[in-house]
Image 1 (cartoon, rainbow over the protein chains, first blue to last red):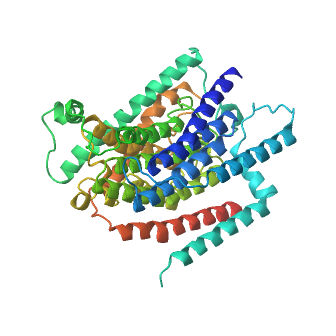
Image 2: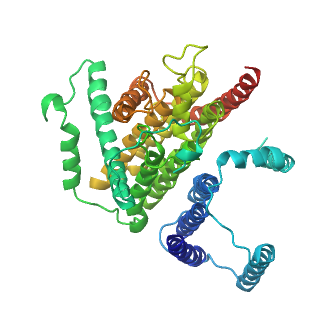
Length: 163
Length: 354
């Protein structure tokens, strides 16, 4: 277990530093690239929890698609080189409150659900089992999410169309 | 690591030689580091230099080594000697990191490609999904290179590349879904085992290469792979008549060499994946996968099958003219994705019926 703990420490430290740089850096593209580090760290945490499928989904969806979309949007509009002023606004207090509130809720839920239970991360979650869960136990939820995404797609096309 | 949990995989032979974990890891990393330059050199020499020349009735490089075999090595040495130039307004750190990120994506793909019943870096349960996932990391490197060069040609090339890579990733993944459904596993060893144990209507001498039932998937995979590699006819991102050289136009010396290795190393990796998914991978008909012989013949068989697949990639590259940007995007979104979805549906239907 020592190796896992050391790996977790390194990943967590890298993620915290990168996350702070996301909001403090003076360059939009740099912020997006630091976000890649944070998301890759999250994928690493999933590997430590023996959730291979989740780790790959994290990489393919967040790094391979969402951040690429961010970078794409930034570079098509105003990707300046070097430092850029005016990236900050006056909402610091509010965002700090929201961040603390989110941390509190998540911490409470975790402690409330597991408290002293030891979770043994020894078994690798098989991809087939994940699929069976999605398509049998959570079929309705899965379809609902799919329908929602389809509606969003159609909405985006309607907004983007000129004629 | 998951071999015991996979009922499909044959009992792999055991060796008298037992290595410690760190020794094994060292050998694996060494092999991985050697595979990318090896694949890039072989593909570059055999197909790009020689086959293309002979198809066009010329000889190609003949001076460096017998029949010019050392030409690319000489080119590599030349690249290493060149000055390492950063454009004046470039973002130095991002500029330097970009080729590494591109190579990282290629490097990680090889982790799951099996070359024999025992010869695999890690037989992950998510196998092919992992390979396609890490391959998408390269897009970030391409965008970084395009932006950090501080040049409009690079930026346009980077944007075109990223748009193309994202568009063709979808049919690439959907093309593999049919294979995974039929084999019943995502693990590449499992898919090879399925093909080795299968039979074509009772005729089991050559197993069941999945190219036969999944020929639509194979065609989709090859077209999307061609686009993922930005090979002609999908080379809009590096269109030299409009963009000089695309996202790597500002790169010189060994950094350019890294991009070159990334391009051909990825071509080799995707060919190896296609050979594993559709042509049976390391399996050779007549050789029992449970014997040590399969470990010896496996890498050779995989290499030959990879070369067969790569031949088609380069044949298309030197035969077709370039797509226009709107044709290129329309082809992916309006045709390939729909055909891939129909293929998944039909595969499911046939699996229910037969």
